[in-house]
Image (cartoon, rainbow, N blue to C red):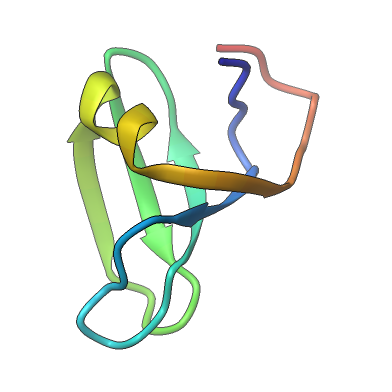
Length: 65
């Protein structure tokens, strides 16, 4: 799966604030993502993050994984 810093993704589960759109801030073995509704940041292992993605909403193809 091609994911880049700056991509906006929709996750399967809702965040407690009610948002499900996240911005990718860091890629690698772990992903750092930020909720676009409340600004909360979370770090997830790559496997858990990739399983939780519903779809990629917008892609920034400037920084490769």
